[in-house]
Amino acid sequence: MSNHFQTVAKTDDIPQGKTRCVTVNKQEILICHTAEGFYAVNNLCSHAEAKLSEGKLKGCKILCPLHGAAFDVKDGSALSRPASKPIATYPLNIEEDNIQIIVP
Image (cartoon, rainbow, N blue to C red; front, side, top):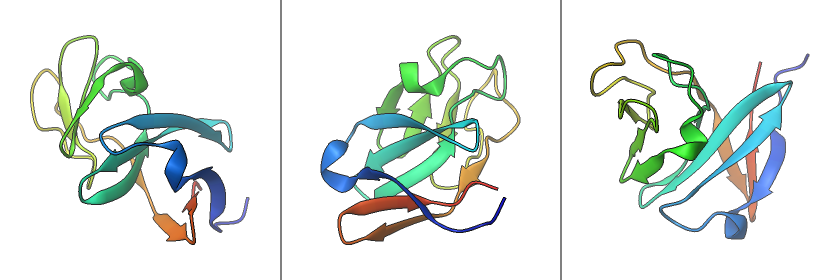
């Protein structure tokens, strides 16, 4: 597996305040479109492995649908209980209108 950017979506595909789940290298990655830009995080909550794509994006926080744990989509840090471990984040690049990420 090489670590190079792969195009996963178009910027127009994901309205601001919304998310889209993509699969890269057999991993589910959640692309989050915030007012500050696009971010890529692992789609599974670090607490109960619920799919964050079923949660809500509020600003730069993604909320887990199961227990309401919040994560910062910019750095993956756990912001509220019951989660205490961060989620993985992935390098993201915008080239023209293509959203590109690196997933090891």
